[in-house]
Length: 340
Image 1 (tube, rainbow, N blue to C red):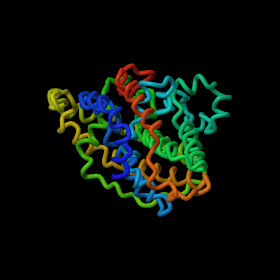
Image 2: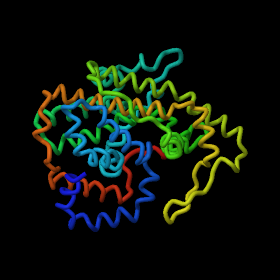
Image 3: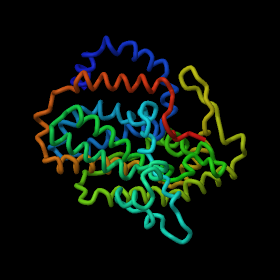
């Protein structure tokens, strides 16, 4: 906390106006992110506590950065063309009758391109392969002992890993727009977590080295996809069980009144899911910690204690402010989860 405060001061004058602008728009910003600000940030934060002694001191010192910037990849959807496709894979696009879609799509990027072309893969999402790329970048950052890139890529990869654990990030029907269930994305990822997070158990054990990361990543995507039937079916059941005027409610968020899923509807849906949201969140936490650990091991297990007490550079903080400025323009460059 002290270290984070000190290097924030370095650019305090530069960032003061941006802070005011972000504060004014805070309510709208929080509503737009899936897994919510809370979800992504909680996953990254708790993943720190899965790390071994050789890593945890460094990560705890920078836990505020790792937590705060868990949402940077979502902001990047508004700044970088081609970012959106890194957050999901519409695996059901490739489905054929009678065949397991996970047998149809090759696991490796090269073979997948050969079968479907790169344009097709990018059109329907590349999250399993993007996690591999980000792990390699983090590994190289460890090799170089580059504190800026270690922090940046640790925060970023945590976001993509978390997204791969969300069932609705594995389907073309990502917001229920194809089944008259529009809004289900925010319901599952954000509203249910918002209402039930205090009851979740975030302590998931210790990170493990992952020998075959590509297989591991695809397995988690498959688990997410396998949960889709329940995600959609139970929402329809609850919709049919409750009168339509009890599905939504109006709540005050700061100075704004918004329409959202009612607590009654949300809690009944959460109950029917029987712990699914918590299970996927817990699995995401251990996955993030394990992939950080794997990148560190493969990066030569550098002594992170030698990087203690070194703040991120002013250049990295300027990059962050520029990203925030692009995000505030509100001009998305690709799909966002609540698209219709």
